[in-house]
Image (cartoon, rainbow, N blue to C red; front, top):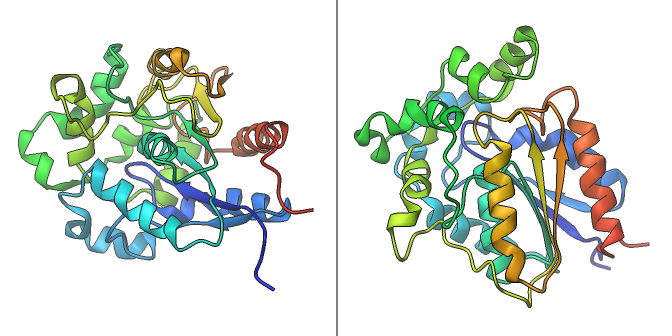
Length: 270
């Protein structure tokens, strides 16, 4: 008989490969869920291949990524949970809004349209892309130092460098431009219907030391959902940076997501 386990689709953000979710996938599988780890459109299967073919993802935008995951979800036997980090957290919100997910977890999510907070740390983290308008059509890689500031600032330098070596890949610059200018575009790809009442539950997770998506940005997004009657909750992790989904403390974050899903009745098959 076909599996009745609830699928969990993991969506990574910029500069990380899909395989960076493997520890989460193993943990969720052990709890009876059916993990799915697709990459972004045109993303090569391994970190090494992605680094060797940076042009493969050039020019890909938010709508392209959302449609890609919606197609993958359409082939699943039942509607999944979607868990996303960074831009994956924005995509998770869009998929939930569009009815493709039964629940979603957005971890340090890139800002949706309507978020006005723009901390200096976020500007510095985005500057390797936003500093050159030509990057909208290109793929961009981070240096080890840029990764340290944007992702690993709350970690020992050695651990930040290890994560950089393990998981970083070139990523398209276009999503950053789309999010950065979302409030100036009526039909921005970063727009989400935050007032929608007939959607599944949504959990925001924020690291309070995050430079790439500072806590104030996540809290601002959370507040935009105040008019919705649907479940929307926020959990903060003190002193954690943008690497919180893959650094030495990842399991605490994964456990929080699992506990929340079970509390909301989104449980794996008995």
